[in-house]
Image 1 (tube, rainbow over the protein chains, first blue to last red):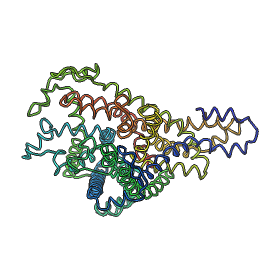
Image 2 (cartoon, chains in turn purple, green; image 1 turned 90 degrees about the horizontal axis):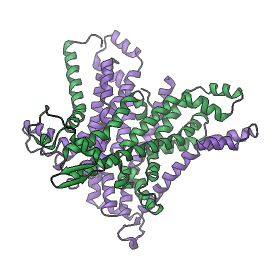
Image 3 (tube, rainbow over the protein chains, first blue to last red; image 1 turned 120 degrees about the vertical axis):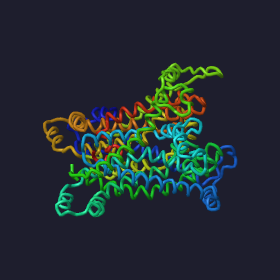
Image 4 (cartoon, rainbow over the protein chains, first blue to last red; image 1 turned 180 degrees about the horizontal axis):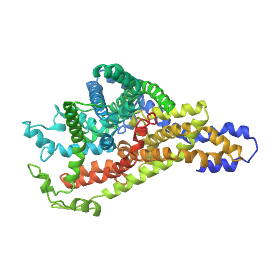
Length: 310
Length: 285
């Protein structure tokens, strides 16, 4: 608002319209630019921290140590554990959510009133805060009274401890992630499916082409841009998962769920090791940066296509 | 497709039922729990039929929890209020900053604009802790730590990319000819923007605002790092409440219900625009 008033106040009508016209886009985007700068500064600071020995409890030891924090990771089993858990968690969640989301989208493909109602209802888990969703599942898997503990007990698993048992903790948080985020894949693929042109499918039906052939040779290839964009979206968010895991177990039991951001959080607040925490996050950023470049390319292509259709 | 076999129909029906049960059961179950006393919750086997009580909600709203060990103060209403203040503050700021910028990026092709738009988009995918940890140290020095202003500012990381890219798409879909015609009639640029472009993109702006409100409300990590108990939103407050109250399961369930109700209602209201928001404006529903 103040931007507009400024523009109106400082621009007398009719004088130098050209110059003002050229400056206008820059003036309009100035606030957004400031936000960018305000984010880049702490980002650069974090990069510098990662090259320092910097512990909050031992400030007098602070010094520049080059890439020593990174070199230390190479021989640190905790780091390799973090990398492994993060990758396994990401792979499991993305693959399961993609398969389930695609299956649901196919089931709801015809735009009947019932199907639309189901697709809206299925969005509710996605609109639940992930940290709160983790609490809901924590209540349901409580060993004392949790309904899910009771139900698996009826099936004979009387000693199933969900997130508090190292052997089932990963399964439990993956389940919560699938519950929250499958609707994300579903809703994007459903929009994609419904926007596909009808002619290829009508032609295939006329020629009596078998359904599996139609699915693998027509539906999937045409849906590919949507599938790629949705999966990359999830991939990028999943490898940085924090809320669900932190709210559920804080990375435990032991170090069983120490994904990148949980580990970095504990390094910072529990061990007050700023340098090490920053180095961990820089490695995570490198991974996500490569992925997000691929993502933005695909996302732009899809965006251009959808806007052309409109 | 049209003439489906009976077996096919049964299979579809069964699959849809299973899917609905899996995705709806947790919400329904927690809602039921929130109307039960602790004794009812602890019963084995669990029962679906029970005498509902409002005691859990009363305790949360009054802020007083009477237990055998004595009275426990609950600040949950404060958390709800904080969520509301932080999310609406963030959305208003993001609209003020984002809508003019989105208009500039849609109407004028200039290199700086593209750079800003893509930088903000790539921040959406950078690890939030990478920005938050240095910020938490700086905020302490600047006195911004644990202030609404400081937290609303970092919420721009969530709200601004969303608003920028959705609203930009709406502006791009409006033909510039209308604005040209309006300006030929002697109106200034700012009049064309406020009287023509913004009203035409209105639905998109409203949708982007609602969605960013939902995402800010659901955020956990920003406030976990930057806010102390006094400024915590419900996501962080609910977790703290679980730790503090221990075994008051009924109240925990009621707190969960109160935390998610606003966003679920908003989502149902704005569902037409959810696809667009979730894909940052790339896919239209």
